[in-house]
Length: 531
Image 1: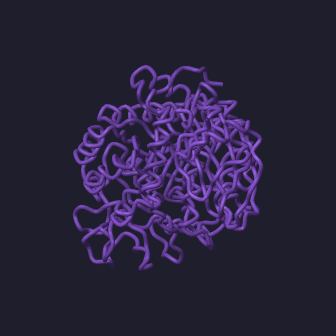
Image 2 (image 1 turned 135 degrees about the horizontal axis):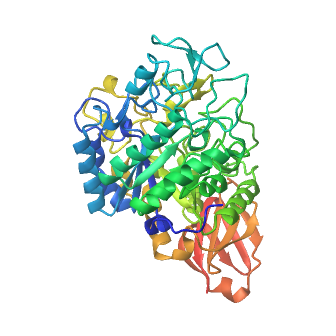
Image 3 (image 1 turned 45 degrees about the vertical axis):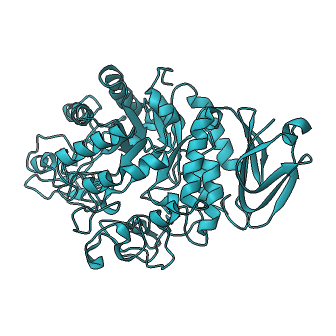
């Protein structure tokens, strides 16, 4: 495992916010969000209590996979603005105590990247993985070079060559991790990261972080690669943070990352811990995902135990070395508000997320209960299967009531994606004015987390009941109960009577303690300081 060398101090208490730049805020009326639009709304994030934000890829790209097909790592996509506009965003965010992280697509480029165009015309170039014969998964060369290349995802995303951990005489294209091409790509990663860090970026979320070295049992060689890069960060940019898209926090932290996300996919159990928590198999559903009811479901037929056990195992293995991040959603899977789950059910989910010992990550719009929007067209590679369309989680941010929702002044037919047509769709302005709104609750929960460090990422937790309601004790002093089910429930509390009798509600709706028992109405939550 990675040694317990300290990471950035700011990360310990961070609340992360993910922005999909295309649909957050459009400043110039072309129907696509941009850097200036994000800058214009930084006060919303500062008011909410966010102190770090992650932008989905904003590098130059043909956008055949929404920016995850990069054609120039050192230039921004013109749709968002120039590098100066990104730097202005970073500076404005820093003035508000907010750090900005970029999404680093490390494992592949666009097939229009100059590296690939050169490689497709030069048999001696090994920046990518080439075969001189047809092979499973390989795609025919588009250039003068004879042969086939290996893509990572879509055909337009040729895999960068970081080498193979194992050789195979039947596959002569397998190069070792220290061959010329893999060495050049590792050096390029360092240069790309250094370029943006020198411009004020606070770190990176790394796309498909575990996939770089091919045929790598246990990800051993991939871990060595990231450990080497982490060593460089510790030396040259000690306040920079690396978040992994790995889905296995213990493995990612051992590989040198500061943090990893519990994901809907990835890891030894293919993402089941998070799906068992609050995905309800509606909206973006991968055909291979199998599960029963999730815990945050009105029918109260799920179990929190699978998530808790997976979290505890990862927390034990990463203690002192890194962080576990718990997202509400992201650009690849359904929002919290999806399918039959309604906005009234989300308060309990946020009460859990913002008091559980992880680094919380709020996906834009979840703080107001934006819903996953079904039935959208395939947009920049959003459709991955008959029932798996990611566009529904990428719709425009809803800032205010009325046409355009404050997202853009462009005609609606020019929007990157359609707005939610529901006349009752939530918006920031309306919820800012309502003290009982979900947005105001999320703000209070973030403030509560800051005011009481025992509720943060690394305080102790004791689970008192893992059914309905879920009840846990933070720092031996703060009692948290959430009931995401529709039916009211009551249970005895295994705590000393004086402690319960002196409990003071810090934030509660529908939960009461007293007489040695806890009573929770449907869709309720409560955070109490014990006497």
